[in-house]
Image 1 (tube, rainbow, N blue to C red):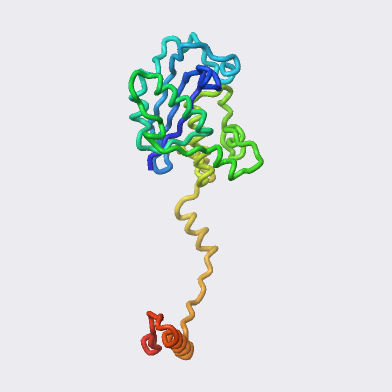
Image 2: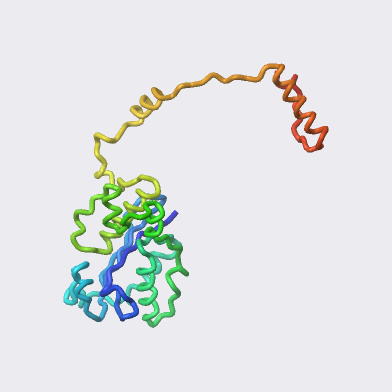
Length: 240
């Protein structure tokens, strides 16, 4: 299965107020393993960020001035996303901005959901942890995922954190890179074999005796006589 973890940063929270995307970060998962393929870009939104949004992402207008417009990367983005399952935290927010950007381009693009499926991890987290905070930071803390580098939001960093959270929520796999594994916690195959055999207690296999087999045959014959529905009459002597 090909899945894409996606996150965006924007100039503000409301797309209906003319806010635009300024950063897109995507990571590729194949069969629940991160590949080295990703899509990441900063974009020139043609406007300033709201003070509140700037405080979150720290991407200044000056920094974004020489970055490409969305229409310049739209084809590449669609090619990267199509035929995958998008994994997004609070998907309606990102999808609204992405669809708006596609709509503003000269080319007639479809909506993102016409190119790929979408899995929203926010309602999924709410089902797993009802009544608790389910922001990305809260989920990182709950699953023991290091987010100490997240002093500012960044699309690629947040996508990486979301990948770890998603894997933890859906199967317990949080170590995505081999260098993160603690050698003291990694068991060899032989160690696992030794540990597992100590816990296994084999029980004897008890077969039916001849009297029990005859009783079973009589029961099946009675069912067949009453209903004609017995399809598996068994002769006791066949089991000896």
